[in-house]
Image 1: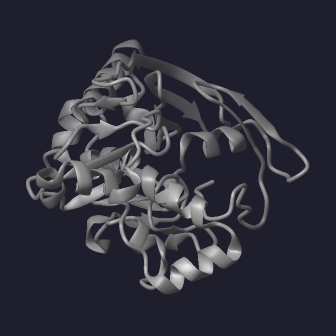
Image 2: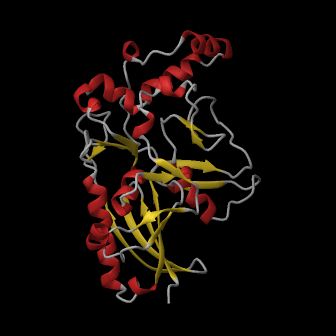
Image 3: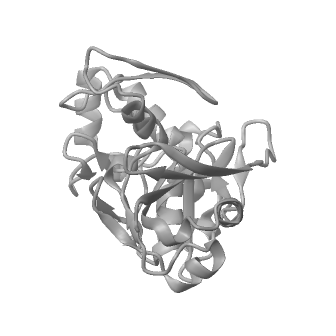
Amino acid sequence: MADLILALDNGTQSLRALLFDGHGRLYGKAAVPLRYQRPQPDRCEADPSLFWQALTVACQQLWQAYPDARDRLAAVTLTTQRSTVIALDADDQPVYPAIIWMDQRRLRPELLPPISRLWQLAFRMAGVADTVAGFQADCEAGWLRAEQPAAYRRIRRYGLLSAFLSYKLTGEWRDAVAGQVGYLPFDFHGQRWAPHWDWKWQACPITPDWLPELVPAGQQLGSIRADAAAATGIPVGLPVIAAAADKACEVLGSGCLRPDIACLSYGTTATVNLCADRHIAPLPFLPA
């Protein structure tokens, strides 16, 4: 009887494998702590293999504790920490360590990617020129191009941690629409990659074909491939369903479903979130 869902939750402090039944009740769980490197005071990095290894260990621990659960799985879903960037080369090897969302490196003003004069004029008239410059300075792709040009030239896939783990599980370079939180050329109103004329493509030196295909929440990202099944113990061919970034999942899971209810979260960083029927930008031209 396929009556359980495996939820893989790659948070900041640990990676958790959780089993839920059809009523949302927790059936079982396992967790593996995560540790990061700080090569400089403003840096926070990790070998991308850290996350995949933690995922495989958490799953294997789960099957040891609940040996009957694998035969009862209906699907897998994935949520991860937001804004952690991973870039891969043509052989799917990392060109640089994963840049964790807590990282505070910034691109020097003289190295910011150029933006067309028309956009610059529009930003000055709107009074947001400094905000846009801040967006450029925080964009990890811009930093890689300026400070790690050899690594930047090798990039063939560029995405968030959720895209990386989805790819490892399914072999499909896809990611959830609702997971795109970061310095990316993403259209929050349209819920898709920004149109080709959008200023974000100039601010973020990213080639469109590097980015994953986006899949709406609730639709299938792919299926567990054979090598992932061997490493994790998840049955081969099991569907992987698109979810959202960790905070978004937390908001929905806590029952914060109306705009008059706010969700206070005290994780690694404290946030307040709410649901609305349209995108609301807390700061214009910056990611939510």
